Amino acid sequence: GTLVTILFNLGEMATATESLDEATFEVLGEELGYKIQMVSPEDEDKELLEGFGLDLEGELDAESDDDLEIRPPVVTVMGHVDHGKTRLLDAIRQSNVIEGEAGGITQHIGAYQIWTEHDGIDRAVTFIDTPGHEAFTAMRARGAQVTDIAILVVAADDGIMPQTVEALNHAQAAGVPIVVAVNKVDKPEANPGKVRQQLTEYGLVAEEYGGDVLFVDVSARQGTGIQELIDAVLLTADAGLDLTANPNKAARGVAIEAKLDKGRGSVATVLIQSGTLRVGDAIVAGTAYGRVRAMLDENGESVEYAAPSRPVQVQGLNSVPRAGDVFIVTEEDRMARQIAEKREAVQRNALLAKARKRISLEDFTRALEEGKVETLNLIIKGDVSGAVEALEESLLKIEVDDSVQLRIIHRGVGAVTESDVNLATIDNAIIVGFNVRPDPKAREAAAREGVDVRFYSVIYSAIDEIESSLKGMLKPEY
Ligand code: GDP
Image (tube, rainbow, N blue to C red; front, top):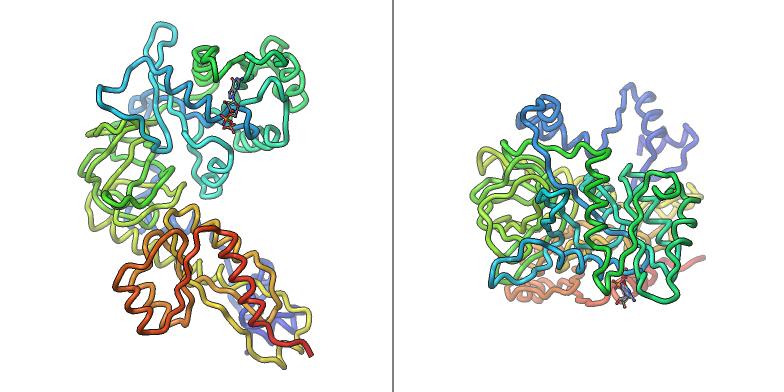
């Protein structure tokens, strides 16, 4: 086509299906007499919301000190595998001074809040209940920063390990202050002094060595040092962080975990960042929308409202948001739905662009001769959004010959439905179900239309099979 010719003249080897980099786009635009401006997804969403009269940043700037109240710090626990992150999160949870009401059962909802007595005052602290920095980075990648303070767990018998360094790098890159929990000090071979010494090389200098980082010796197993650790978190929060929010407005925050529950439908744990969320509120989180039907806390107790830094599990959304999706409360149901639908359209376009795998062409002439690019279209459905995203990413990483490409035309959380099958019929796609089954209507439609629906419960076998079918589609080499 014409674009390809222009590009060729500019010294770019390209075909109609290739994605171009930003610089090439700009040159191409100039050549055609247009000024091309790249827009980031964040800016695009900001514009979309402004179209609905919602200016979230402007609103924050306009807030006066009188509106702001102190909110609890939000803490993530990071560190090397087996250094005791999970055990420590359990120990902290058990240290809660306010017992869950009788009958309340501890629920894993992705985050929990505890109350503690600090300097004679009752204070709350929120902990993200998914240890490790993977969730932390995934959320940051979406532009959502929920963590105020990171607890870096280092086992005193093991010392600094690769993931210790990774975790502290992530926290430092995000500008999140660190409190070090030197764990397993009950072990005879524990050497807490060595951990302090090792970490100075990474710029984490303990207070007792003249630095400003708080180190606390703990034993997650024996439950010692836990109160001191929580105190250190609050001291760090009070020393340098201005943790405030306005609770007296419509809520806003981030979805930190979400899934499809058999009985309750979409359940999403959200962390309130400002405002107060109430049962009955109209809410949109990413492309999911609805009305808050019920809210549960970490003890499975129902709550009527949730203030800043409070994690609650929300029921009532029409679909499952992704971890890191920002949520807002809107005045009307209709607006929540419209925002979700607009975002869905934007995402569909972005997905199509992303799904068109970059195929670098060394030989422009050869591609012209062969003329056609073979495409494998896929629809991915899975039980949780994390798995769907992981699968999608791995699939797009499969290396194949230039003449074959993989397109993910749709993906989502939940059972394979008739509408998935319909889409597969139109675009001649294969449906990949991860830990999900088709509903009866979908099964029927797939059989009728001859749509190939494949089910997997292990990501690797899905990747394996699709990779070989992609390779099977390769044209013979001459
Ligand atoms: P994670 O991979 O960082 O989440 O580590 P876990 O919390 O699963 O702990 C790894 C192992 O270390 C488990 O066998 C724990 O029982 C053990 N462990 C954790 N904390 C302590 C501790 O304070 N003392 C001792 N002796 N063992 C611990």
